[in-house]
Image (cartoon, rainbow, N blue to C red; front, side):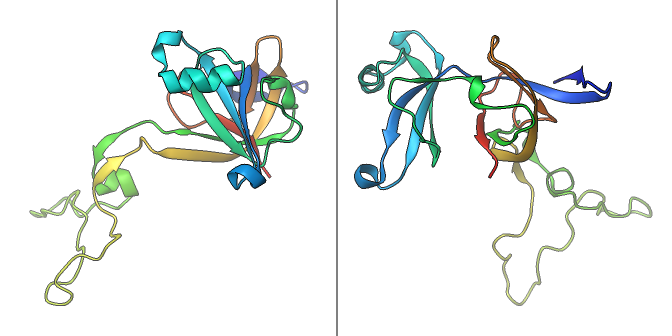
Amino acid sequence: MTQVFDEDGRVERVTVVEAGPCHVTAIRRPDRDGYEAVQLGFAEVKEKRLTKAERGHLKKADAPPLRRLAEFRDEAGELQVGETVTVEVFEKGQTVKVSGTSKGKGFQGTIKRHNFSRGPASHGSHNVRAPGSIGASATPSRVFKGIRGPGQMGNARVTQRGLQIVDVRPDENLLLLRGSVPGPRGSIVEIRTDA
């Protein structure tokens, strides 16, 4: 993240995202595949890093060896296999949604994971950071499914909606998005139009 200045002098907090160039590696059609989508590839790698099946799939699309493939539903439009999608498909002021994998926090308790309140910390209380009661004893003699408890936090797919594009820099393949996006620095995210 960084900050840029608007024309009127206001400071905008932005996340800089390298968006593309992405190669169109496949087009999904309703008559053949049952749904409509476009498959894009990103992040070139050495050919030895891919399996034989991946290399064959990309060769059919006349694309270089790519690390990441992602499908975007209902976004095919006029695209053809072999074309390249660049950051120029976006425009300044447009609203987008960004999906990615959030930062992993490991095993966390209920206070940090679910914003539970802590118990009293005085007069010999043993309920300082414990979750409290999680169910009755005799009936139903079990804990109901879905009770919010401690466990793995983060490292899950997150979609941030309503992010506005502050600037588009096609010569550097950069998008400047207002606010933050899911995931750590250097992670791969998917940017879609927010309809």
